[in-house]
Image (cartoon, rainbow, N blue to C red):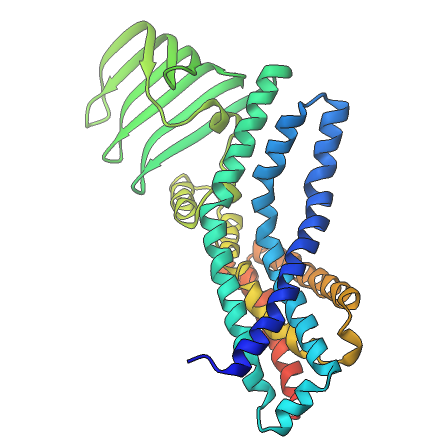
Length: 363
């Protein structure tokens, strides 16, 4: 049963948390999204409705960073107000320790962390894919672009199914295409075509002027089929090929694990991908760490002001991300394991928060 003290502190945290969500969303969206979109509308003639859609699609990717920031601000402002009104002193005089007051703070931090983790797994990958697809549609409609040496593997249930290669792709057309088909881990078919065109109405690729080489289980050549046109159903759209190699931000944890496994089979260096995999869980749980760090930092009466709390939050976040960049760099040099490289900033922040809390408790 939730006690009155827990409900009271939870209520104190909720208002500044919502304030933080709004404030940091406005700050980051303006600096990371709006500036580039305004330039695209004015200088490159991007339609206003397309820019608005892109803003909506890109917003979830920065929300992953905003949740921890808002949690830090909430803890700072809530405990700053409790301290300035001497309520913390009153609690402690009543026999309620500062550690006990942290229970609802840590609960909200954990709740925000889990929400952020689900959000980053479910919403962010899909919104990133939608943004890139919209960009591709706009680019092919207004200013066609070309990408060379497109290489995209397709994995199904952890096993390599296909490998696509194209010399170049422009709009909805690929040129000099090679598709390698695998069955039970063995190469079974090779399709080579001069061109492949995407049919929007049927969501299929039409391969033109090509040859299909059929291989036996032993890998030996068995038969070939020449064709002028061949419809092929492939799950990848032109947007997927145009993007090229997959971005970890566009994948869920499961998809990224499968992608890393495939890259390892190909002999590719995957240290950076493994770090990104661990960051997918480390970053959402920064909310829990910031809850532990923000509460003792807010105990000074001078920090009850929302402007001071916002400024202090930005300073803490700045040093947190500096530590993150350094830790990732050390991880890429293989001096840290990928797990440690991703989680070190959280571990350091939690240690600092615990030391501040212990000092404020008089221990």
